[in-house]
Length: 146
Image 1 (tube, rainbow, N blue to C red):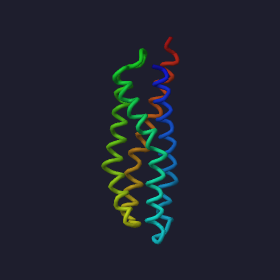
Image 2 (cartoon, rainbow, N blue to C red):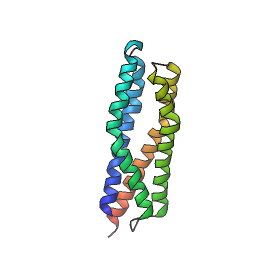
Image 3 (spheres, rainbow, N blue to C red):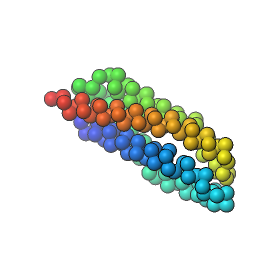
């Protein structure tokens, strides 16, 4: 069970690191690419970011569900349910806010869509930050449990 939690912690911390780089560096720089090269740049971004985030996001989702289903001794229910709720926020935000903006940007740079992408992505940045703190608290709690 501790191995499951370690995998969960690792996936969440990887995604927190990725979202910080995307939010603070990568998305803001979309506006610097230039209109001529933006479509190709954006297509490469979508292809390559999927390689980076696909597996950790799926691991995080699967282990969050598993932790609710088979909660380790010493972890209160609120922790695992809050963690799963934050995962739901992340997936819903991605599907309902960020993916639609990326669809607009597939056609070329659009300043309004870019601005909405950067602003709405704070939902994921804050949710993964909260998850990072939560999973580290879970791990600390389990390390103290005999």
